[in-house]
Length: 413
Image (cartoon, rainbow, N blue to C red; front, side):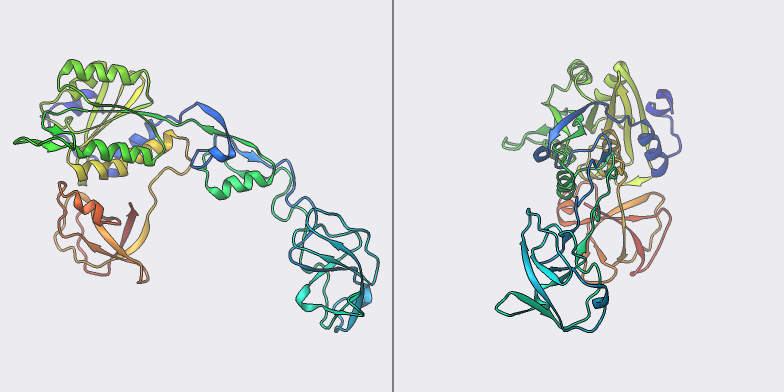
């Protein structure tokens, strides 16, 4: 879609959500800047390269529990119990035992290396100490290799243990540490520039005059970007003039990977963001078959991507979730960047078909199987309190009707 088609007032068909997402995601460029970080600083970072293990883990056969390592004779394997073994060694984690000969046992603890000659481990609860605690007796059949964790049981030498594009969780960091990795190469945080215009917008803490509103979108947008781990360049409220808007875009384009604004770019609005972006770059204005949030702007200022969200608070948050979030996550280098859904059943009827796909705010009840979702009674795009009440969004397909119990896609917020 070119600028003329996207930004003038000539009506054109609405894009489907899938078409808009496909175009957005196709245009997202993965950041090419990386850095080495210590394990303590790696949480939630995105892995820039595969991590391969230089060792096997564990690096030696070891005991999976406290008990006795035994050199079991061939004629004792799986034979009814009653055998006794002389205790000749004691092996704790971090130490190495002596060679174990036939008919002997070594007291062994969880994680300790299996001594040479040992071929099974019997848990301590199944062993009875006899002869002044110098021997053990076992009264059940014993098999080979019981309670022995073999070398490489978890990881083999050369295994890829963590793949590029993974957002690192505590367990990932632990796994890296377990094979001796000290630092991890990750993608740098992307820089997202924001600013806000509008004479009607007032910062919280100031008195409202007639016709004014508090600027909740500023704090929603910054919080959502922070939650995604972005580095934010926030110019705050700027003068509502064409020059000030151009100056803000010029400042951000040289310092940011993405610029995001809310409001002021839909067809016919008197606002400076649209002409300023068009002057410094290019802009497509999309009307999307989605509710809430039909208008969405996408383009660039020089080489910096630009996304313009709707101005209504719920529309801004929902379209950020649907479109900006996967775009940003792909830019961050994540291999899984699309929003994930689960299947839930609806506790409400939907009797009037709508031409746009709707994302309605719901509260989830997990006491049922599958979980069930109740609808917030006010679904207007101005009802910001509904976003606090809701656990997530139900995706209602276009031109559909259904009764309670219908299974649909659910997006957790």
